[in-house]
Each structure stands twice: as structure tokens, then as C-alpha cells.
Picture 1 (cartoon, helix red, strand yellow):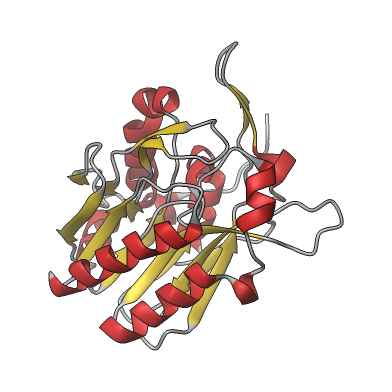
Picture 2: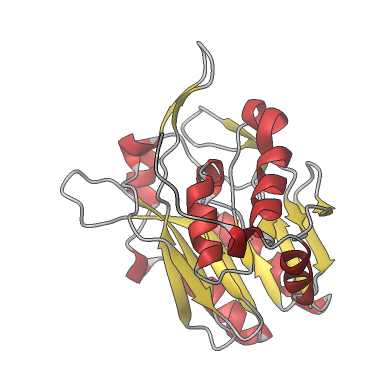
Length: 276
């Protein structure tokens, strides 16, 4: 199969971001990709809650979701929308960071809400509290397609091997980690974490990413690491997109999952044990 990662430099304007994605999806399909993946918060990358409240919509009204559903049907391809920021009915007004798997018929095959919130103090000058604006999900998801079972995760989820292991034990052969990684944590941990998740589960890891400095109407911009990555079940880096936005097409053979798991059957060798 051919897949394609879309590496985006999304702004806080959903309409502008959708226009770019539709162009990229059409080009990826023209290059033969039948599975196209977008990054985290593809519709709106913003640090301003005021702007988010102004431009975001509930899932049922989200124009980005509708536009990419139409693109999947038009090009007869699978699309993993890495995630969209969408409004919820939560009393405290928090959003959901939600991933969508779209079928070639344009339907929503599966959704997943990001479980682990990026609440960290990277340094004295860099602090993140994702849970202030987003509610955490509670349900792990493995989606079924004709070509593979897909374990859906988002960005910070990659730091939690219990989740990736649970997805693989439930049958996942591809783990998806659409992301908007910070430059500091990206340089330190991005490649190591994604290769580890692939190696320990014998799964393909596909991680489309945001990149660069992102335009913002609030005046406060944000930067992301880029380096959208595909890792084989044996831990080899199949694709590293560097830092330029664009379409990155790659080949993958799902037989590689069985080959890796036969060579090192860690999933079947795992044993229950008592805690220390």
C-alpha cells in the first residue's frame, strides 16, 4: 500500500487550514496514496481560548470534518484526521481533542478522544496545561479497516506504553500518533519514543506532525517540531519528513507486522505479574 503523511503548518483559521488540506489530500491521492493522515489539531492550532471559542464548532457542525469526509469519498481513500479541536457540551466549556478515521465512503469509521493531557513544565519559561482547555478521553480505540487494525492515539499518548501495549494486545497493527510536538521535547524524545512504541509492539507507527511557527490572530504564535515519522514494526525509520510542510508519500507492507512479531513475540510472551 501507499500511505501519505500531511505535515502541516496550521494557523488558527479553520477555513484556511481546510483549503490547504484539501489540496494536499488531492495530490496525495494522485500520487497513489490510499491512506492519508493529518496531524493533531488540523483545524485550528491556537494558544488562545478566546479564539478557540470563536472559531471552533461541535462535531456535527465542523466544516473541516465535513470537507475531509467529502475528500475521502471523492478520492476513494481512507483518511485519518489526526485530530480536530471541537466544542463539547461540557459544563466547564472544555473542548475535545478528537481523532477521526474516515472511510472511502465518507463515513466516520471510528473516533478517539485524546486520553493523556499535556500538563507539563518543560522549563521555567515553557509551561503547558492542556487540561485547562480540553477534557481528557477515557476510552482506548482500535478501528477495523480492510487493510489493518488501527490503534488510535494522539501526541502525548506516545509517552504511555501501557496504552500502546493495550492497543496491540487488542489487535492493533498500526499505531497512529498525530502530533503537535514542541521543539524542545521533539528534539529530545520524538524519534526515541516513536521507535520504542513500534519495537515493543511490533507495529507500524505513523505520526503526522505540525511544523514550524504558526500564524495566529491573537498575536501569540506557537512553534512545533515537525519530523512527521513512519516507523516499521522492526523499528526502522521508513520516513522522516524533516521540517517543511507538505505531502510525504511512503510504501508499507502489512506482512511486516507478522514478520516482526514472529521474530520477537513480545506480545505473546508477556506475563502477568504482581506489583513491587
